[in-house]
Image (cartoon, rainbow, N blue to C red; front, side, top):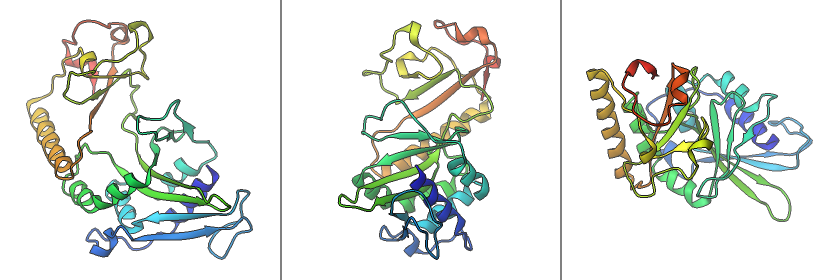
Length: 269
């Protein structure tokens, strides 16, 4: 983790002029910057207690501009990812074999990626940038950086990872979380009812609530979902979900595992 934090400090600290109208070259998949971090330090890097490694920034200008679009404060970003509090590894890797880490304030998530996944992401980075720039209220995941750490030595192991926002970071406690795909095949949790808690990822057939929105909110929500799905379809992305976090104002509803929510005032959005 020290390698990752040193690299992020270096990358974010290199702030330059930011313009929203990026040149085509900024989106080139070959647009990357390598920086070597020797233990004794260098003209551009501090001394450190880790091994010799190289740090790669993919499309640095694009992600620097994305952080501006998403109103990310550079100092807060570095403090969240590089502060004294260690990153927390989630209990198990995802189906893809990727590992996930959370910052201590739950604001950011780090996901390791395969080389093939990085290539796909870089191919769609221009379309992603244009989409999030056009739709301020997009529900698509917010990405803040794409990096690689290459360790020195005989094996020269590479670890590629992306930094993204954690949807469930909220001022409200999240009591139930759902991964919705609009499908019924295999869409139930494998946990027994007695073991379901606020950290369980529930699925489509586990959803036993009715969400009531004001007419304007409902229309805007559906319009944005349609736009986001169009974007994902255009990029040939098939496996995507709508993540939903539920906060109960009335704590008694946490225990109500059956039945439907009939009063929208019991939910906070």
